[in-house]
Length: 401
Ligand SMILES: Nc1ncnc2c1ncn2[C@@H]1O[C@H](COP(=O)(O)OP(=O)(O)OP(=O)(O)O)[C@@H](O)[C@H]1O
Ligand SMILES: [Mg+2]
Image 1 (cartoon, rainbow, N blue to C red):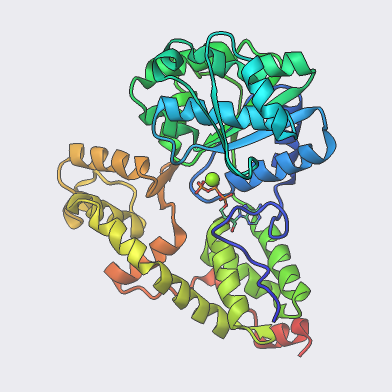
Image 2 (image 1 turned 90 degrees about the vertical axis):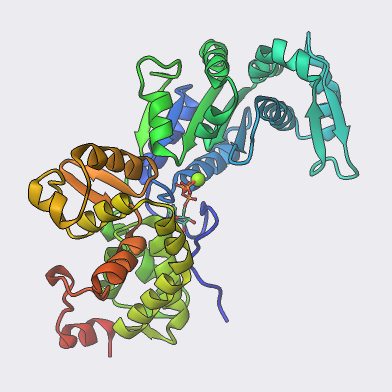
């Protein structure tokens, strides 16, 4: 049996990657020309995959540029960050682990690195410092890549995923200032900073009173278009000896509103249920499966929000946008106008909804379908006119039946 051509759960940067030509070119060119770049988008639209893709391309072609990707998701203190940061820079600076030990020591003036090597140094290698020294001389680590780059005649590109996580550290403001002041003077190191908590990222990079304001270019990563998804889905089915009609592929993208992770998930479930040719039957079964698989998550999400927030979500699910009108406030029991405004901010900051002009939308398309079914008994089978199926004859003709 063939493997599914659709991937979700991991980043995709090779086989299941599609589109993003414009963003790839922009990011590649920025990083190679020394322009620091920040990437912001809602969760699971494809930031990490995009960076991995671009870095893989750079690694293939640019031998004098060393690249590093660090995920800061589970880093919980400044010390931990600095030690991880030093380790990754030392590792990237040479392909020989013997050099990590010597050069690691050579590049510090005030700090004394303790280097630990396991049986297999490539997987078991770490660097640690005395915490008091580290606190005093953290700039030596923040500048380590530049120091090494100068001595070795190389350049560095450093990508920090889930960058906003640093802002949860104690005394982040001081550290933030220090990072910015060291990094902005560097000539041989370029940064790519991205993360999925949008309001935190915005607060770090779009706030004129913060140190990282105007640190570089900001890319607001858009969704992948419907047309690209259709091509990708149809081709992926064909490559694995199955068939899907473009209209049905479009349906998958529309159901999931072009959300990268979910389109892949729904496409995968559909592919899995399909013997040879996917039809509406498989897609709808797949959708049921998808919603069911995610239901525990959605229930948890609902448990964590207050009653008035839930009511506000109900109003949004029903297409309301004038939340402070007397009718809407009454109908949905939204509390006071102050409640409404506070709840709106909370739901936005928690990435449950986003605002586009005057309209509010659920960020998670499958959660929205589940929510409407749960609270309004609305079937999530699409009946909207734009999704009405073409006459069966057209389908038969195109699918070669
Ligand atoms: N260019 C792409 N082509 C096809 N699928 C993609 C693409 N980018 C992302 N995806 C799908 O979306 C999923 C999430 O991607 P990724 O982890 O890169 O997003 P992210 O924005 O970094 O997410 P998070 O905000 O959770 O960190 C992937 O597992 C994959 O299924
Ligand atoms: Mg990511």
